[in-house]
Image 1 (cartoon, rainbow, N blue to C red):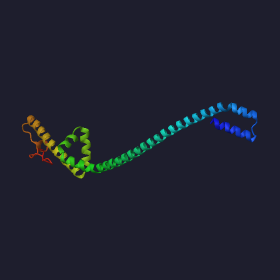
Image 2 (cartoon, one colour):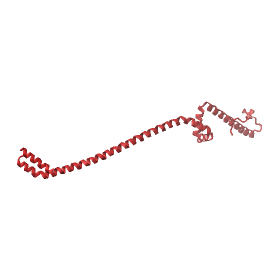
Image 3 (cartoon, rainbow, N blue to C red):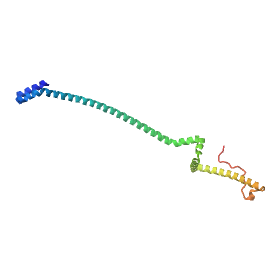
Image 4 (tube, one colour):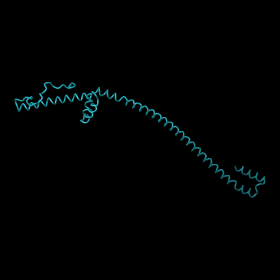
Length: 192
């Protein structure tokens, strides 16, 4: 580099464009200027290497982020497909549930009866629903009639027994009372 500087200085002198004082000044400054330029070049090269390293790391990071984004997109797609399948399964189960519940109740009447009669409130709500159905309304009416007739027979028997104790000549007709039915009321379904 120093040789180049000297050659350039001599060439300028030959051309007559540089005065001798300037030439001497240039010749005196040459080594320090050359050292400064070399130092600047070294710093520029070091800075360039740092920038290349940084660029390489950033490219690696961009590639890593792109890979992660691709994996995230694949995972999102997989989750969307899984969610869609779960929603379809749920919709199918919701459509099938009433039929399956009806079948279960039909197969598990004893357990159903325990649940229905677990509390007075539950029993009352159940009977309200049953009463809304045509057959349910008829069955509740028959059960009510059976209960009424059974209770009426017991009440008459008790009343007549008390009156016979008080009046040994007691007759239901004489008192204007209905006679005790001879037959037991028949339940609308077998009780056992």
